[in-house]
Length: 195
Ligand SMILES: [Zn+2]
Image 1 (tube, rainbow, N blue to C red):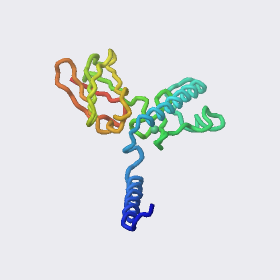
Image 2: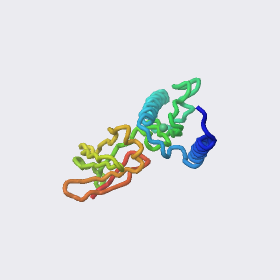
Image 3: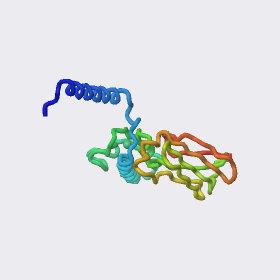
Image 4: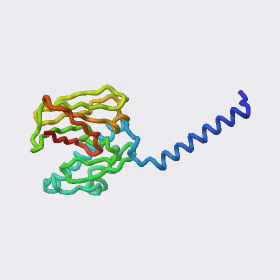
């Protein structure tokens, strides 16, 4: 098939627009933004879990104080628990804290506490049986009820909803009182104090 000049020009300019668009995206969208995929969330969380287990092993080998600050150098390398530290499938940066705390990824959804919601009263006591509704734009809303620790997890979601999480809203209803709405955080868990 031979394309005439006009068609060829069209194809070339469409290609140029695509390539240009990609560079703009790569330059101006910081890592972590616009990256919401359930597969990556699950893969990154599996790595974070492995790192967490290694942190606890390291802690046990160093006196058992879970408040000790752990560093990547403690876990990886010749004397470490990994040859090479696991890394985020989407290029997020891992952050380390105390050995007894979950390591974090710089991509908000990549967290072992992603979707964890805690409902407390103003005094800080857990509120059981509060109704927590998650609304993602363009998706059917879901309502869950807190357990006796005032806790529920919003993590059971289809892959097609993943990219809507950055614009999600959670509202909380306690018995007959009016609902309280809050935008989803980038730092999980989401702790909501209600009257
Ligand atoms: Zn990650």
